[in-house]
Amino acid sequence: MYNPSSFAESRPEVLFEFIEANSLGALVTTSPSGELFATHLPWLVDRPTGQHGTLRGHIARANPHHRWARADGAEALVMFTGHDAYVRPGWYASKAETGRVVPTWNYVAVHAYGMLRFIDDPAILRELVESLTARHERARPTPWQLSDAPDDYVQQQLRAIVGVELTITRLEGKWKMSQNRSSEDIDGVVHGLGESEVTSDRAVADIVAARRPR
Image (cartoon, rainbow, N blue to C red; front, top):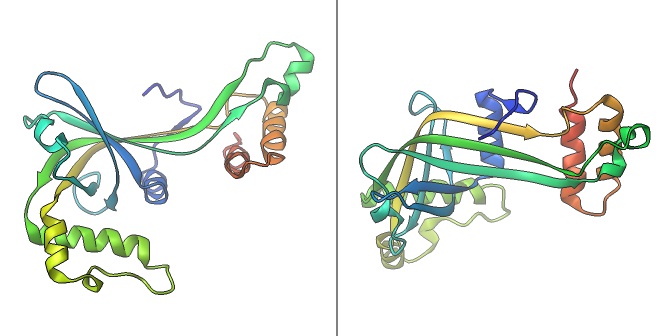
């Protein structure tokens, strides 16, 4: 992705923490004929496995993605996004000084590239679903477990999915959070977003403040 140095984030621990907090990612691949296909799904991060970590998830067997994706070692992409917000020109101090300002959009995006494989092994699929469930249930007062459902029903559901594994070859992170503006303009963005009634706007205000160039 287009990623000017002022917005780029390359620290693996920061990128993985972002993925874990925003785990719904869009898997994008090409077919043998060159067509693009995308599936949105939650992912688990396995940091130690592989040189740059591994992503794991599953899709419905009825989803043709596992049949259409190229199987010749072509690179696949998973895109993760987080909080984003519209930035008004009126928040910039420089508007009053020069008027040379335009609207923009602040956002965070992490792209994971790598080699893809699909998994049919029932034992691996069960472990994957158990891990994904535990990841999102562990903080609940009464965590749901796969064993809470009848085993024949679980087996039926497992037959209806296909596992997905992306061995990461590179990660890109982009925190476009007004770092290319003056300190006074950044103050205006933080103030403007911080006064918004929209929760995600206020979250972006916090990120802009945290990402202010030192």
